[in-house]
Length: 384
Image (cartoon, rainbow, N blue to C red; front, side, top):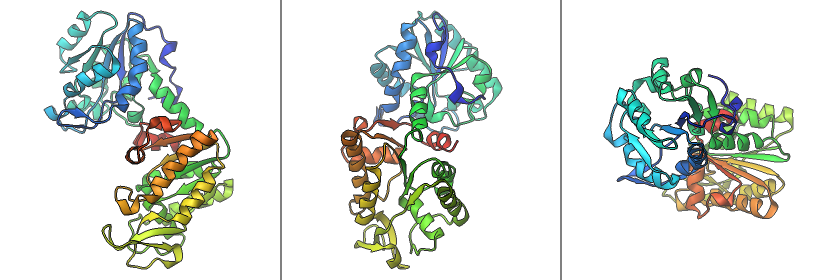
C-alpha cells in the first residue's frame, strides 16, 4: 500500500459516469437501533455530495463492530435510514458484497445513485487483507476513494490491498484530517496535551512531539508513568512500568528544547469513592491513588497554552467520569475553548475519551478549530 498522505484528492479525478468504491467509517455507537453519534456520517457528506453531483455511482463500504462472521446485530442495514437522512440522498442497501447479484443491482441503478454494501467484517478476507477479497471489491468499481481516516492505519483489504487494484484517491474528510494533523507542528509556539492511559501505544507519538513542539504537557495515568520513571512515588496509582522509553522521550525533549510539563500536584484517594486529598508530588504515600491533577498543575497548563498558537489535546487528565475527579479535564477544556475564541489559537482535539469529555462538559465541535474522528489512526499518523 502507498502512503495515504500521498493520495490525490478526489476532485482531481474524472469521475463522471464512473463507479466509485467509497471506503467510509460507519462504525457508529448504536443501541436499540438508534445511532447516538452521527459525526462520522456527517463528515463524509461533502465527498458523497461531490460524487453524486458528478453523476458517479457511489458504492459505500464500511465495517461495524467486530463480528467474527455474519451476525445480524452488526448488520449495516440498521444505519441506512440515518445515513440517508444525514447525507440527504436515498441510499440503497445491498445485504452482501461477494454475490453476483450485487453487481447487477448496482448496474440497474441510475447514475448519481448511492448504495451501501453489507458489513465488510462479515467476510474473513477483510481483516486478513486478502487480495482475492480486495479483487471482489475492486470488480464493483472503476475508482477507489478512501474517506475513512479513522480506519486508515489498518492493514485490511478495503484500506490496504484495494489500493493495488484501482486508481486511488482521498476523500475530502480524509484530506481535512491529514491537513489538520500536519498543522499541529507547523506553527510555533505549539503544545500537545496528552493524557489518558495506553502509555506504550503513545510513546512513538510522544517521541515525535518531543522533537518538534515547544511544550509537551502530560496528564492521566500516562503522566504517572513518567513520574515513576523520574523517581517520584506514585503510590497505588495505575501506570505502566516503562522507565527506559519514558526517559528516552524526556531526553529527546531536552535535545530539541521542548519543555515537558508534568503534574506537580494531584487529587488522590484510596479509591474512587473515598475522601479526596490534594497532594504535591513529594507527599504521595503508598496508600494513595492519583485520580486527577491538582489546581497548581491546572494553572501551569493554562498559563502555558495561552502562549501557544497551536494546541493539540488527546486524552483526559483524570477520571473525569467521577464528579470528584473531573476538575482537571474540565478546566483544560474550558481553557482550550478560551484560547481558540479569545486568542485565535488553533485548537485540535482527538480521541474518543477527549471528545466524550468535551461533550459531557457542554461543549461542541464548533468550540474548537477541529475535532478528529481518529482513534488508533490518530496515534499512528502523529507518530510518523
